[in-house]
Length: 178
Length: 136
Image (tube, rainbow over all chains, first blue to last red; front, side):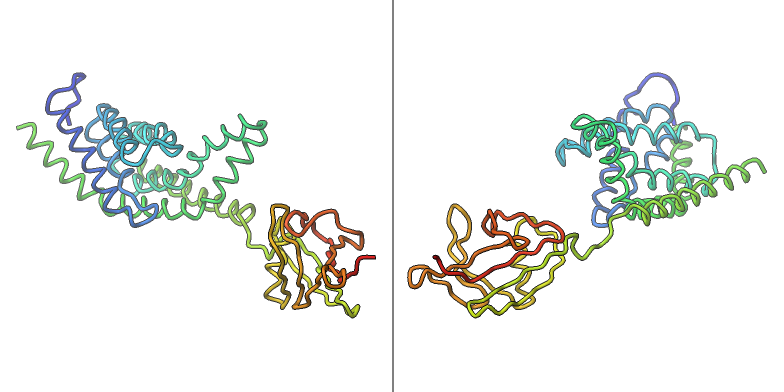
C-alpha cells in the first residue's frame, strides 16, 4: 500500500487494523479445527503492504501469547508466521489465485512438520540426536491428518477469497492514494 | 505461458507432497492394537480345579490386567494397604487365613511370585497363577 521506508501514523493504524482482522477471523473460526484465515490474511497483507507487514507478525504473536499463554506452540509461532510472510514476499509477483492456493495449501500441509522442530530440539537435548529425530518425527506423523485438513482449508479459502479480497484491497489502495 | 508452467509445477508439488505425507502416515502412523502383551491368568481353586484366562493387554501391573479380566468373568476382592492389595477372594472363593490358614498365592510362570498384584509387572507371554493354598 505504502512502500516508503518510514512508518507513518496511517501505517501504524493499518497494522493495528490488520492484526484485528486476523484475530477476529481466528476467533470466529476457532470452532473448526485447523481451518484458519491467518495464513490467507498474512499472504494478502504481505502482497499489499510490502515489507511493513513484518510488524504485523510480532504484534499478532504477542497478542496470541497474551491471550492464550506463551507455551511451546508460541515458540513455533515465532518462526512459522514470519516464514509464511517471507514466502509470500518471495512470490509477491505472482497473481494467480491457483498458485496462491497451492502455496497456502503447501504451507498448511507442512505446518505440523514445522511445528515438530521444537520437539526435535527437546528430544535431542534430553537424549541424543536420534532421540530428537524420533521425537520430532513421531509428533509430525501423528498430526498428518490434521495437516491434510489444514492444507485443504488453506487451499480452498485462498482459491475462493483471493480475487474478491484483492479487488477490495485495490479499491482501498486507490482510495487511500487520492 | 510462463505463469501456467509455474502453476502446474506448484500443483504437481502439492500433489506429490500430499502423496508423500499419506505414505508416511500409513507407514509410520499410530495403529490401533488390541494390547501389546499377551498373558495367561490361571486360577487354581481350593478343589484344585483350574480356570484359564487369555488376555491381550497394555497393563503395566497385574492388578490392572485383573481388572480387564472382569469382562471374561474373572473377579477378585481384597484389602488395600500401603503394600498394595491383599487378595482374599478370587472368583467368589474366599481364602480366610484366620480360619484355616488359607490364602491366595501368586505364581509367575509356575514359580512363586515375588510381588503382589499391584506391583507385579506384566510381561508379554507370562503366565500368572492365583492358587488357593494353606499355610503349612
